[in-house]
Length: 144
Image 1 (cartoon, rainbow, N blue to C red):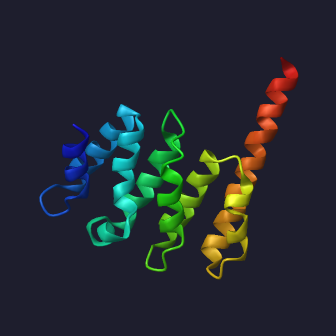
Image 2 (cartoon, rainbow, N blue to C red):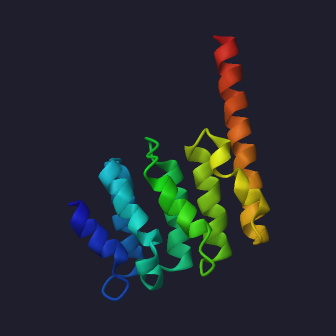
Image 3 (tube, helix red, strand yellow):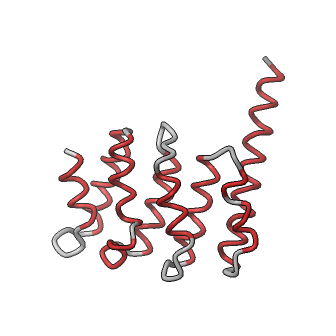
């Protein structure tokens, strides 16, 4: 039940971090757009105080691991990466995750000029990852 798993994931008062992680991993394994959006609820501003930087960092990592690429996660990750309140590790992992999800570099290229060096440098890493992924795909295509 996605609604119940989301409730557990966002409840830092009644559930341990371990149980909340289990809810997140279960949502990941469901591998649907709805479960992806549920995971992304940890990144919205109204849940900022319910979710630690450690949890949100892991959320970004998990979103990039999902078997299918759900582009619905990109706006949530982008918003978190540009939130001045957000921890550096969340911004970094969020941009790296976006780099794993998109092919259009123009979506994140403006962040190379972001005043926060963590955002600018993480954007450079994400752009490099996109280039590497495209090069690997081109190489595989050339072999076959």
